[in-house]
Image 1 (cartoon, rainbow, N blue to C red):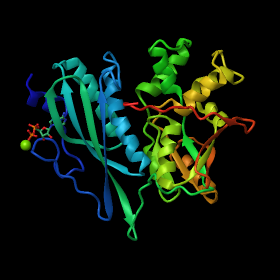
Image 2 (image 1 turned 90 degrees about the vertical axis):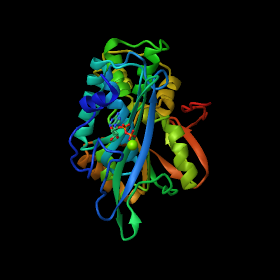
Image 3 (image 1 turned 180 degrees about the vertical axis):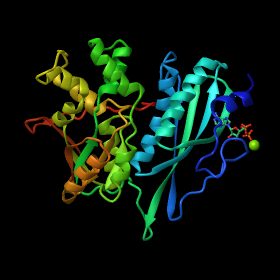
Image 4 (image 1 turned 180 degrees about the horizontal axis):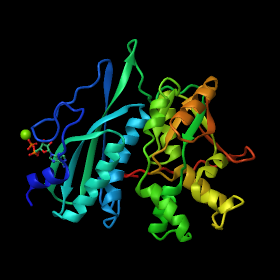
Length: 332
Ligand code: ADP
Ligand code: MG
């Protein structure tokens, strides 16, 4: 099968909202009147971001999910995406599963594939997503990293730490019962982009970021751009690890023999969570709860923003913990 047949069979679909989809030199996208385009790219490289033998359906899902997560963090509504794909060979069953996983998530978010590029080479997947954010009275409604104020509450959505737990098990660094790995692996391989929450937080959150490299590392980006400090309640965050809940709640069938430091490291520096980390003034607590309800996404308060610069991590007794939760950095 040649390059153009491959594109036609696996990636070309009728344009829906786009003015022009796959097939010409450019796609054409018409943003709604009064909206800005929000644009973000993410690249997934075999051996770096995924294992060579990962289920291609799940890989298709994840490649788009990590991009949709960036739109979610900005409170942008997904519109369309492009796909630049480098493939070592034409493997039709792989391509069928990859495109099915990719397009299923695309359909779920009404985000259409409008173009891309296909070449031979090491397996590499680069997606660029386009979304839109309204401008109201000259003011962009995008959620950014720079709006946090001292005194704001700090929240994170969903669960954290499980993706890293799964990765460490797959790398042979940790052992857990199969049932724990199965759930954790779902978080690693098919993360849920929090698009609905991002939209619901427009006008409510003062700043937001998605957690890709690790909660504290990503929080540091908010601190830097917002010129604030923060206090994080470490032992609130470990409650948000699904595997922790299994192993400690009354009904928990599993005993996972991890130290407090191991749990805290998973939650605070795990990475690959694709949850939203955001701030909002205390007067907005009801509005945050309403946004969580409307988007059917759990959110938890895990700390607060401070006027004192820097990051303080506290245990359940309020004692300061050493801040050595390194987040992921490809070049560190
Ligand atoms: P050009 O050479 O003009 O850049 P190509 O011949 O590479 O265009 O691609 C032909 C058409 O197929 C273009 O519309 C392009 O956007 C689309 N396309 C190429 N690869 C992909 C892909 N992996 N997914 C979706 N569309 C693709
Ligand atoms: Mg061209």
